[in-house]
Amino acid sequence: MNDLDFDALEPIELPVKYKGKNYVLREATGEASVAYRNARLDCTQYNESGEISSIRGLASIEPLLVSLCLFKVNPAGSVEPVTVEELSSWPARVQDKLFAKAKLISGMSETDTDLDNLAKALRCPNSPVTIEELQAWAKTLDSSHSDFKDWISLYESPEQAKNSQSSMTIGSS
Image (cartoon, rainbow, N blue to C red; front, side, top):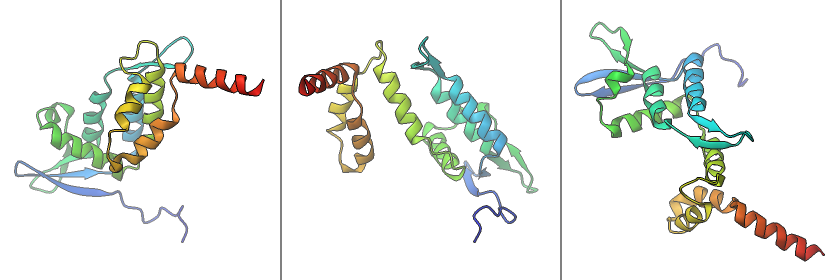
């Protein structure tokens, strides 16, 4: 089987019901994927060194992706896109589930990128949370969070890095 043969590829669609109305959640098109990823990058602020200094408005891009993938099914069977404005009145738990499904069916797993961005943000001098605090909190998590616990254990704060470098220098003299 050739995994690059897309002749019979149909977009993934999931039926959705909300308040008695029918919707369909579709796999993101290339255009929708680009719009979502660009909006995600627009939320990231960089300092003079090119490092991430803050992330602002990231939550507002979740309804954007959902709106690009969610369509209301009319009685005649035609579909129309659901707007961000319409989604804003839906409960957060509904939006969160739709967002997670939209990312999943669209192949937009960004876990590693998000975690790396988190580490960079935590290293910033004005970060409200330190890597040490996050590492201490991670130790309290149960085994279902083992991926995150393993990930955070690999990162060092600037202070930890300085201490480990001076230890290595002392040990090598």
